[in-house]
Length: 222
Ligand SMILES: [Fe+2]
Image 1 (spheres, rainbow, N blue to C red):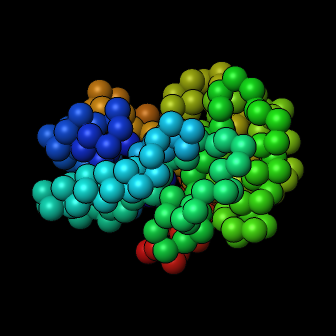
Image 2 (cartoon, rainbow, N blue to C red):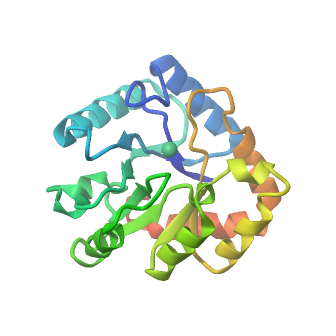
């Protein structure tokens, strides 16, 4: 099972306060059956220094890799907060899953800024980046379906699948091929992978379809 969205790098963001927490997160992932985990620390282009982000991600990934003794294949991408003009950032490909052009993009929660669809289009056309919208379950479905119409793909968090009345509406997006990844979006260790396991059990064959899509999308990294 592939976890496409996880905050497990020690001290890289608020997902883990240090190595002890990160090692516990990795142990929980392994117990749940995860074999590939993409660490996705938050990157806020309007606030964070890009060079410093890359340095910190590299250092925290190395710290975890040096101390983790388990079998999960660990790699680091980013959860990139979308803003207008992101396509002007030099070295943008460093935010993708390593060895691919696949980028996990987080939409602003309240409303989409004017010009954001043009930014997505330039990412896809000029940079040949494949944006994957993070946790599309959290947003207004009308907004998400408009973005799917542009050719964008989506990632679902495990969390909505524990809610009997919320999960049904997500199934058509899976069946229409718009969902290419499931993520734990793990922060800390309290919830761990309990929601992820429940999502896998609920989704059944649909989970296997999503997992296969994720592996196909990032096959250059595997
Ligand atoms: Fe996240």
